[in-house]
Image (cartoon, rainbow, N blue to C red; front, side):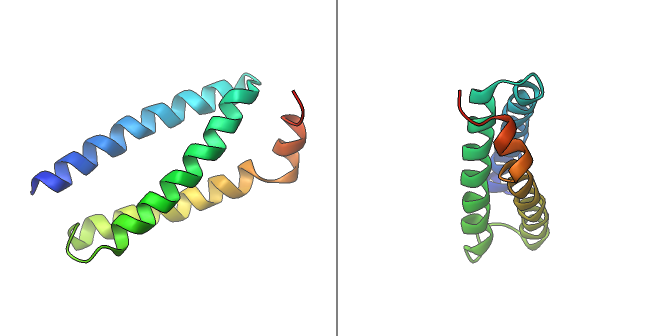
Amino acid sequence: MSDTVWVRGVIVAVSSLVMFAFVVGVSRGRRRAYLRLRIVSGVMVVAIAVLVSLPGFLPAWMRVEQGVCGVLLVGVIAILNGGYLRSVFAGG
């Protein structure tokens, strides 16, 4: 495997831990964690779209894996921006 794959794999692992910490904060009712989760998840979807679209940057299997992660993350964004959670964390 190339260095790019290893570096990207480490970045994905670390970012998943950061996202998990935000989710824990959201589950405890922390508005700042909710805002961070909304922002970071949006940034991650854009980053994934860019990385997947760069020709030859990642092997095909990792492009598919990243694409699936991006699609799942779009679902997370939809939930985070839905009416229920927005009302729960409104104001503050």
